[in-house]
Amino acid sequence: MADPYSTLGVARGDDDAAIKKAYRKLAKELHPDRNTDNPKAAERFSEVTAAYDLLSDKDKRAQFDRGEIDGQGNPKSPFGYGGGNTYRPRGGAGGGFEYESGGADFGDIFEGIFGGSRRQAGGGFAGGGSGGGFGGFGARQRPQKGADVAYRLAVDFEDAAALKPQRITLGNGKTIDLKLTADAVSGTPMRVAGQGQAGPAGAGDAMVTVEVRPHRFFRRENDDVRLDLPVRLDEAVAGSKVKVPTVEGAVMLSVPPGSTSGKVLRLKGRGFHRRDGTRGDQLVTLMVDIPADDEALKKFVESWESDTSRNPRAGMGV
Image (cartoon, rainbow, N blue to C red):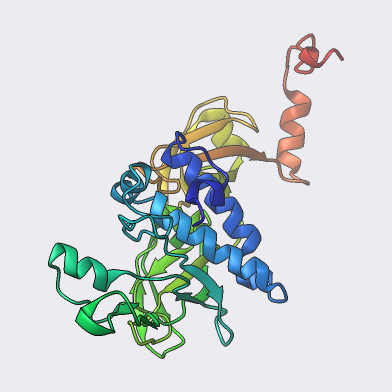
């Protein structure tokens, strides 16, 4: 049985952030849409996703660390028999994955020991022979869930930063409102339970990878939004209040008197959402706009008595 820590290449003592970072890196490398001709990569993608599902759940991770469950989240047999469950790629649209049983299930034996009810939808052994002994076992295949289906969702920059819900139509024709998360807009696939292909043990899931569209003047830097803002010479020299676009609409920004090109002003909480519920900022870089052929400005500069001994480039050694 694969160790989820080994599958993700992390240590048992690593924190949630390290596990998330490792999964994100592997998911980007192994995503089915990037490896259409490599079934081994698709199988590996399924394995790392299953490992992340377990380790990102605090209760399941603790159970695994205590040896109570195996790497697929199944209770360990008291007699030392392992599961052997694996994910294998399934053909068809969406490049989904199907979960299948690869090992013996001793549920009926445990029923006799612990007095549990007979499992209706599990694999295992059916007793046979005289006296209800252990002879004549017949293996039954465990019903399988339907395949997961992979989707790519292109989202506008402003919607991604503000986590605005997205209405999407799935391959089964169903339309849903998808609530974006901070992890999703940072590249981690979103799992939408029960929206994959149908199967005897229930439908698989939809795995939605969000792609943020580039913006014509906004750009992302970590969790902040950067913007280069043109301002007039008089607005920079005398100071002013100017209207500034943000991902959630325009706001007024105070430009201090004597501002020069390159000065950075900060709008708190106008950036991308973080996992802990806080937000980055919008960083506005002022760019003083000088008109090319302004005769009045030329005359003003010619008549301006400036301190010619002042060298603004002195710090560069020139």
